[in-house]
Length: 215
Image (cartoon, rainbow, N blue to C red; front, side, top):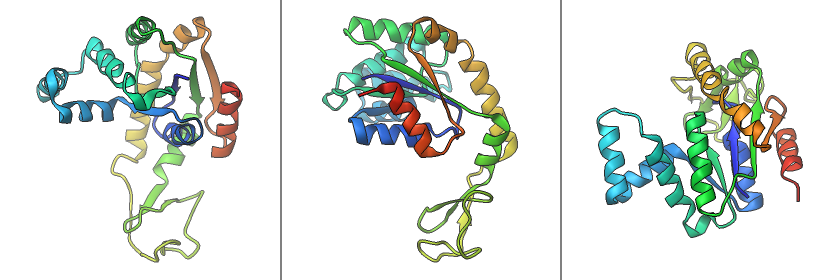
């Protein structure tokens, strides 16, 4: 089974992808992680990617699709994949479909995790973690049982991600909506697009995704 999860940063794509990996044996393919691995491996494609990134340029669509094609040919992806971060344009979506078709494969589902921007901003900007053990907390939704003390390790030091601020989050949301808007009708027309409520609690989002995927 081959899937795409669509949703802005903070929508919970990573959490749901991990659950799908565990339950269905799928492999999450993050284009950022794949690029770094490709460069580390070396080889002609890796060197080409390294040169492009070193020059501060964006990776061309054909190289991205070629990289994904090589990755999904590896044995660990035999049960299928979950794409995260690609495609972002209709041209990329078309190139991905062609590559999959050439390999005798197809996308089974494209799942959009719908969010409410203002609530998502609150969800992301309130996040912080224990600096020692990494336990996650939130200003509103999940505070330590004892104020200022980590529930897990007892540390009193916490940290926030530098980009978890309202201005940055709103910019990322705007970029997501601008990039993703044209893709949705494309996949709708191909009959593979479904939506879930990304603002629901984690277990409910999982239930909605499983209902789409079926047995």
